[in-house]
Length: 297
Image 1 (spheres, rainbow, N blue to C red):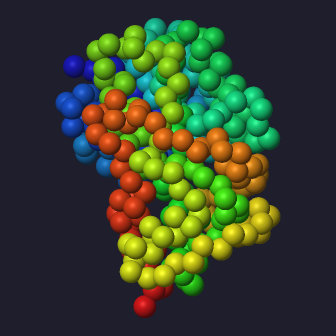
Image 2 (tube, rainbow, N blue to C red):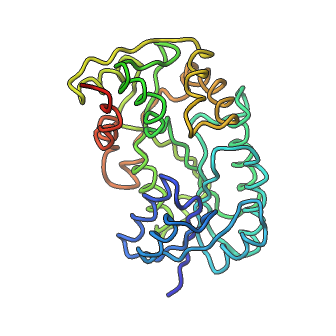
């Protein structure tokens, strides 16, 4: 039996969890990767059909989507998302794809200062216009960001820096996102999902002080929350290897969206779709405890 589900961005965090969840359910999976390397070989070893492709290469997308009924569209955090969405939607339409689950962002709307968030809004519209069974996944703040934004300073001098001490936001475990995606893609009743915008939250709302407290509790070490200006924060995080200039610009504008309360909500999406409560932020940092405690005596 050939794979009828395609996972793009297959070496990314949420895609990895989605793939594993589908495999655990006995579902055959095709994965699109940009490069063939040890990560793609690891996917093959798990029984995944691997194809090499680029979102901006229409012919590569035709190969990746051939015979596919449902797909997860996960574009990397860089520019040209609308163009990639348009190419993907065009080929999905040609190939008769019945459902595309696409990664967007909680609170995405046209009234935003961030070009990256604007791109998410445009991409949502593109998939809707293409009539390819669009389902929009809109997570809150990603828990894995804290490996780059918090862990280095926590490990080095026991401090967590972030703008706006009053900002409130939900933090989502990537495994929950991957499982939501997998459950939607494998659901026999596709009609109940098509056209939906799913806001995916964690189990609670956080402030900078509460983030620091969870890390403190886990490490049994006092971690201080230090509010800083947005410019100070960007100057610090832009040096991280995962932060490209496009992402750095987004984060500067994105911080105002966080302060505006666009991520200040919890939802029952994870529970309704997966059957379990959302995993906690503390559970995520526990899984990566060594990253936070490297320099702690």
